[in-house]
Length: 158
Image 1: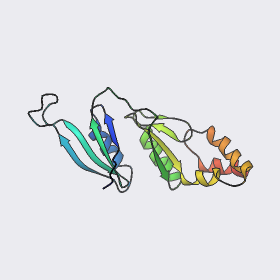
Image 2 (image 1 turned 180 degrees about the vertical axis):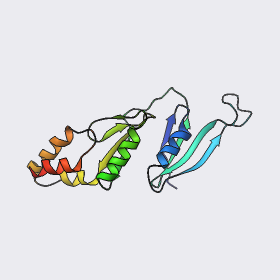
Image 3 (image 1 turned 30 degrees about the vertical axis):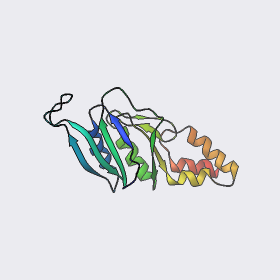
Image 4 (image 1 turned 30 degrees about the horizontal axis):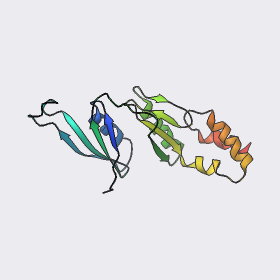
């Protein structure tokens, strides 16, 4: 177990969000759901207080803390995607049912959490020592919402 575990503050839907996230990535699972005891004066008996879950091997906690602290882009989850098919699958699932696309591979899911859905090839292309080719790819990427590897390669090749 890692010494540091990110804790995400949700407004009553931590269990729903955890179940959704674990459905998207291999090596993911809900580990534990802590519910309110009957004698808790601030929440109904059985209400979800905390969800421990693992996404692709990384532990997280989801806390049902209320509406006081919404998510912002100041924290996002970067997903290193193997190929365009994985980008497309995750992108479509995360923006479905109320999510919103952003620029350059960023999006916000239906819970307000920000994600960067990035194909592994992006780093290779933008990091190419030929700065002119990499620059063309960068210009193309800056016009994209979801990253399109084929379009990046076309721009890169000129």
